[in-house]
Amino acid sequence: MLLASAAALPLLLGTAGCRSSDVFTGPDPLAGRPPLGHDVLISRFEQYYHLAEYLTAYTDRTIGIALGLPSLAEIADERFYGDLGGGMLESAGRLFKRSVKMYVYPLLDVATGRVVTVETLPVQAVWRHLRDFLLESGHLVPIRGYDERLLSIFTKDVLARIQSGDTAWETMVPPAVADTIKAKRLFGVRI
Image (cartoon, rainbow, N blue to C red; front, side, top):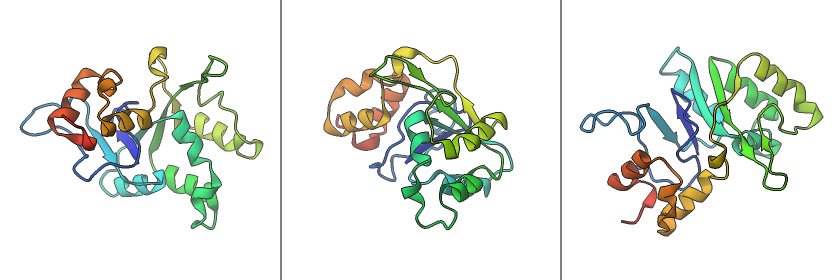
C-alpha cells in the first residue's frame, strides 16, 4: 500500500492491511477541507507503477507520490518484478514515463544516528546511475525541511498500534489526522 498526495505530504499511513473504507480521497463534502488542508489518496496498489498508470488515466498534471526512504528501497528490490520481463528497470520506466515525481522522506539510521536521504542512500552500483538520473531529472525529489524528531516514526508501526488498540499512535500523527481516523473509524481503530 502507498500514499500519494497532490501536495506530496510525507505522512499518514502507507502499509497493507487497510479495508476499502480506509480511503479518503480528498475533502469530505460534509466536513469541509481534509484534515491537513491537502487532498490525499491511500491505495492498495502494491507496485508504484500500477498507481501511476491508474492516476494518469485521470489527469495530465504532475502526479506526486510521497514516500519514505524504506519504501523507495523496496522499489529497487528485483524480487517484486518477476512478472515483468525488464524487471525493476521496466518498472521504473512505467513509473516515470509520464509526469510523476516521488517526494522522498529521509530516515534516521538508528545504528549511526545519521540522517539518510535519497542522495546518500547506499545503492548497488548497477542502479546508482539510474538513481542519479532520476534525481537530476526531478523525478526523485528529496524532502527538505523535515522535523528530525519524526524520523523514528514508521507507518507500519503506526498502523500496528492502531489495529492493536495501543493509543500511543495518536502521538505519532498530527492531531487532525488522529481525529479523522477516529471519527471515520479508519484502519480498524478501536474506540
